[in-house]
View 1 (cartoon, rainbow, N blue to C red):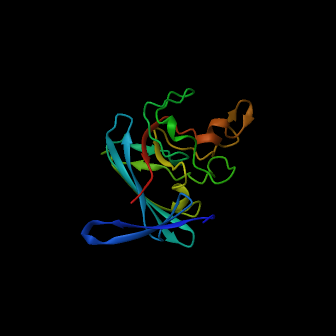
View 2: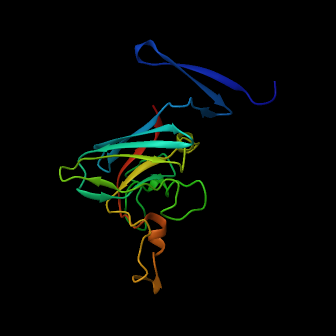
View 3: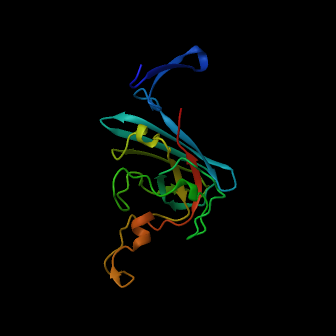
Length: 198
């Protein structure tokens, strides 16, 4: 029969529970409230954190991160466009690993800090640990789980949020330069995690 087919899958979970998920034309339609997440790893393959993303109602998503073993201080923290964390994929411009994750995740044509995937800096304490919970209306979990997926990236430096006072000059012009508009000038990508269904 021509047309769109709808399939229903039953997935076994621990303790004998079941969850239903519908698949339409190769796309997964998730039940409300089912979370996604990521295991965050360094370029050396060491697990340095975990991330949880869940719908929190009224078109908002709740992002919770827990990190360990990272350099103290503020770190740029963003969702990136592709769900691929290959540390051997090197940015030819900056020499940064995880180039495979692509640019910042965005649902429009925004510049930094207004990309859909731009988040506040992640603060890492002197003992190398950090925790944060963020609520955003810039995306929903299902959008992070699109055909090419998405990834969470922790950067080496703080994100300037393109907040450069006019007294500073960039290429003879006041305000943020192209790199600040692209990434918040947050430096190398030091950790990456692919967003998956949980």
